[in-house]
Length: 420
Image (cartoon, rainbow, N blue to C red):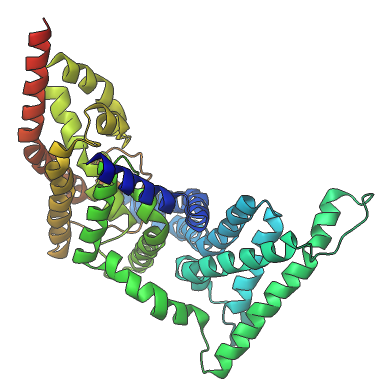
């Protein structure tokens, strides 16, 4: 078992430390404040007190609040493109700002232009989450090419008397020109092949197959199983799967946001907040349920102490005190409830939303530290049903955890009594 554990940890460690995935993870994290800020403005515009919401609309404030939401969500693609290139360049120890700016210019180059009587412009949707995949590909490829030129000194070198910032700017000219030329050639070749929209091409060839994991119930259950598997070996499951899947989940969230603001039917049940707010209450393994049991039902002194220390952080989604203190990590007796609780919570929540008993997530990305029940209320657009379903899933998870918790607590109690 130790050998297998070591192999899994080594394999997951390689994935977690892969430079492109780290850059992607850090790039997504850079954009998260914008997404949360936009979510706050959207929640204010749709305040749960109907009279207040109507008053905001009547005086025109709702339009301005929605504009603030569009301004933040609407540039996520640009921000992530720059940030991924920036963090990857940081890993290679090359000029980060130049790599980010050149990647940004490349994304704009690949984005189709709209022509009208009033002039030319870019479709704004490709500057937001629909442009994420092209932006990520562009950022990684552009930075790799940038590094290739810089590491081989294929740059304009300025005398030592020139200020460093000016020297950096000139050293980016040759790599930047080559990168823009490469993307221009790619664009021309695709155009000759009848491809007018690079974003649509990437969506069909990469995003569409991957979306099976984030738009279908079997797909998201597979993601949950993979995350739980890595967590059981002490590896942060979300960090392993997040760089690939979170852009897709955020695209689902943003599609719901756009539909919600337009007063249309929300297209997606599975979104970023569905997974991280509704499914994983308290963190990995739905350990909010276990934390409540340890806090309220423990007889052993060890668990009583752990319950007092862990209930507050777990309430704010910081699961580590229970994961490592109980422990659930590397405790293979806890595999069944640790996996079963999020799977059952997913099924309950999904079908409750599917049949319309619970409001779907409206695309407001709630901070991951928001306590359960409050998170469900906010993520569902200030609907009580969002809070109620979280209470139900936590109670069901408590029932799943209880026999395993009782077995552990009784064993610790016997050990304490024997030591006396």
